[in-house]
Length: 162
Length: 96
Image 1 (tube, each protein chain N blue to C red):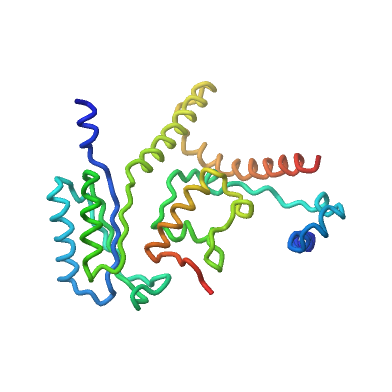
Image 2: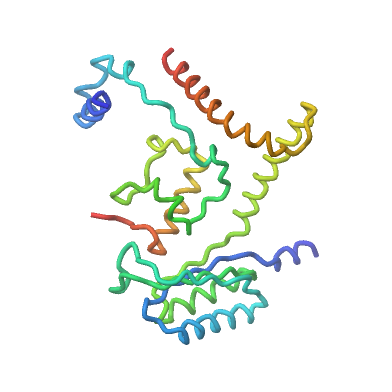
């Protein structure tokens, strides 16, 4: 049972697509509607949509030097991506698209952050300080950090000369 | 800096200039720290061109970590991010 529910767990994907810079609002709205329909069909959900607007392309794509970017963050099953990919490939208004799974990477980043925070709290408690650094401490630490940096580099230099 | 140029030229010619002078010992480049470790960046975002651009020299190639000083873990993540950004034409594949 648990395995079955795991399989159907939603994943998070980021879809970015590029349309020619002269694409009208209606066409863009229609495109968004098509994406939404596919997502709907797979019982997924569009978490947010971010139009980046026109951007210069780093290289020409189909003779276009500029493109209008749209980012969609989608929660849904894996089957959704293959269908989205297939449809976007066929559409002429989309000159380039990319679907990337992000939930795992974001979770890893989140865990790393939590671990760092926990380590800091533990260290502070051991030293008998309040778990969270105070305002004044934060300010002082910024200055200290610069000193620490210098010290570290000195250490490396020493190590290399041996 | 001149030491370094000499070194690289020697490498290009092959074994000829290898280890003849003690140039290697006198030359020292400061050990560089991984930018992502120092700034505690956990997720290297492929959409953030500003974050990637310091690691993409003029030619458009990915900067090797022996030059940038990025640690192995982050270089791996950076490499993936740059390749994704290339697909989206945020960053060039090559620039001549």
